[in-house]
Image (cartoon, rainbow, N blue to C red):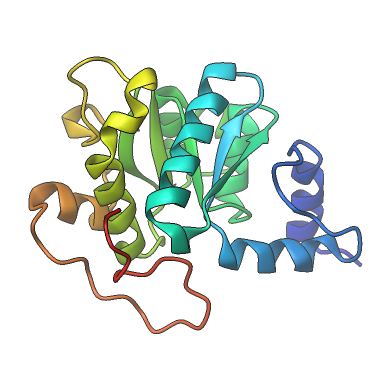
Amino acid sequence: MIDRKRRRFLQLLGALSAEQFLCAHSPYGQWMMYRKVRLIILTSRADEHNWKTGEALAQLLFTHLPTSNATYARARDFTDIVRLLNSKQHDMALIRDIDAKEGLDGSGRFAEDGATPLRVIARIGAYVLVTREDFENNHAYLIAQMIDHKWSELAEFVAPGQRAAPGDSAPAPVHLGAASYYADPQSPAPAQPATPANPLNPSDPLH
């Protein structure tokens, strides 16, 4: 019998588009393996500017942090995105401040889902790039660093003078790894845990 977590996953899976590879045979298992080797940024299909921003961000990371194998995916809307993060079926997303705040508090649309320990990595235009608190510090540092170094490639999507650092206006706490970078951009990245399938490599050069 499919457990509750898998049932929730399969329900939300129907809202995702084909930017993601899914095998017809055992989709849950294939999906979990796919996530181990790719950094997937969730965006909202209902907000064209959002998913186009996410597409540009994924391309930036794929190009300059190649071991991330970054890509983007479009969920039905921002509500589904936060629920996918809450259920740990996804690790990263580009959402609005209101989505991050309600998700963090477990309020509004997410009162029945409970609080999600969201953390902000960067502010990009009208959106914030978020993950969960359990996302590796090393990864968050490298992503924040690369976005900051290649900020000009996102000029089409951000306001003049805006920078990646979330600042005091962030709708959720800044991830510890990203905060470490913003506090001292010259500091070394946090140590990377010894995991067999780690999609980000601290030795990646800044291209």
